[in-house]
Length: 462
Image 1 (cartoon, rainbow, N blue to C red):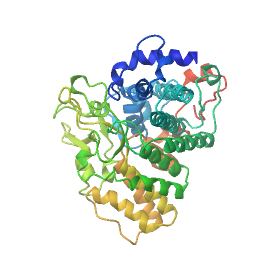
Image 2: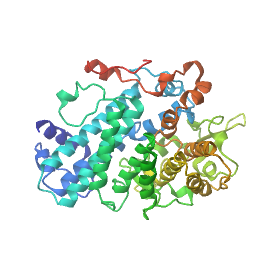
Image 3: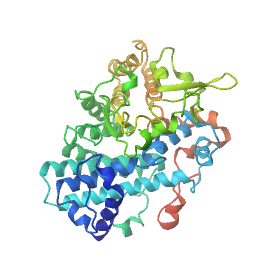
Image 4: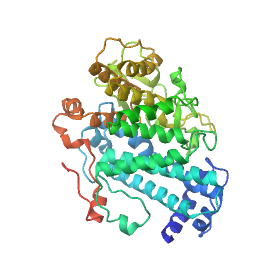
């Protein structure tokens, strides 16, 4: 347990102030902090929720710009208008094991997994917490461990499966097969579903609840082609009266939106900053240049006439030559009113569940039901319903298109969708040309990891 004591001592120093965003009581600051963390409901809660603070404390971390924007660049959604090598390698598929953000995303997620493992170990040992608090915190920890493992396995392929805080063993772990990692993800998510409450612990949607666990579980089932389970699990979330597809698209990404299943609350709000996504992508003034730009040819051109998502979730500017370019505008606040936070970073939302269920139903031959789920998204976007005469293949293409237009620049959806449907080479090779190889569907394992762990092999192509 000594390593856990040290860990939570460091956590107390780094997260005490920010944890107040999630709980009322800060972590104690003395050097024996970890001995006290799991003997009190409030400090145990602070230990777990400190993870959400750590995820969103700074810009250009895994949980904001890196997972959402860089994966969009590696797909066909976005590019960086200026020259910056750390971004260019994603857009141009020139990643190497020493690429900065490949390394930081890998390291960030394993640090977060260590956090969840330390919480799980401490929570399982204690008998001092209120039963309902203990169950909720265990559920949140299982959920978050599965969340990071999901992103690791989709970004890097077979990865070390870390389930303890034993750093000596962890530092020598070989890569676990994708199927083994997914089995662990599913097991953790089912544990989370059994433990967490339907309600949000603080009333706001900044800590996961049972619906969040089911939402991620539905996605995992979809990725594993477990169609019936994906349909049923997404259906549970859709049936929950707490969530609805908001008809006003400009309200979807607001704090505690009725469409939000799980959000990250901003914790670094100096100068009126809200989300890192809005701060990074939104131009500083109405006439300023946007440096993160949406791909007009391969993305913007896919929108149908009168699609409200184009009108509400993208912004545009004119170049000096009179050409129009677009930028992400789901988050609209770069700097708002000091002390007022109106937008939270979206992690999971209801629209994805409709699209998961649509695809799962179509794969089972339930064409009318699948089309109805697609139409729910299309009608909300101001578009007509699909023709009842469309074939299964046409409807699968339609759901893929709606996923692209609905979930763009959110958490790597497009990048992962191309991979899981085996469309990466067909879609991206014509765009990226000689820079594209089939092995580019995975990031390289960072050199920092392979150089310290002799059992860790590199991905093909690197």
